Length: 111
Length: 118
Picture (cartoon, rainbow over the protein chains, first blue to last red):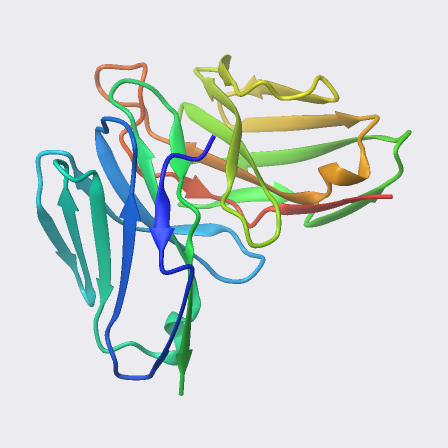
């Protein structure tokens, strides 16, 4: 079953602009992660934020987590054509191995 | 070595065939996963192994049979599949937390095996 919903489903921006993707989830979580997937390839882990954290940065990525609203956002700053990919949030409940993925946002960055 | 290797990359099989997908990792991870992904959909969890024991089976049909022969290898045996089983099958691994029984978060994925059932 699918844990998270993401919006927008698709996002098209120009190179240099910022891209923001949102994720909502339904149950209590231990952590929330964001992954990237190039077309037809495996997923690559981008960043993990724990339930007791509110914001985290990694290079051009900024992730926020609001556990009261059960939502997270991923901001990619100064986007590049190479950022074109699908981005998924994934949640892991406390105690266990069940990592469940949201529906994903397809990002298109035009050069 | 931070790679998860999946073979074959592509597989075409008939509904009466028996085939296997293979996954290998040498990161010392003790949790390994199979996910199924249809086009333009998120990965769906199928199975999780922890310390070579099946920990999670997400009500997957018995025509999919997982096997974990050792801590580095994970197989998915396929038999009597249906055309709707055509998908990208992704293997992943993760470290287990110090408390055991759960992962530390990050999953390392292979590139997937694209399966077509005719």
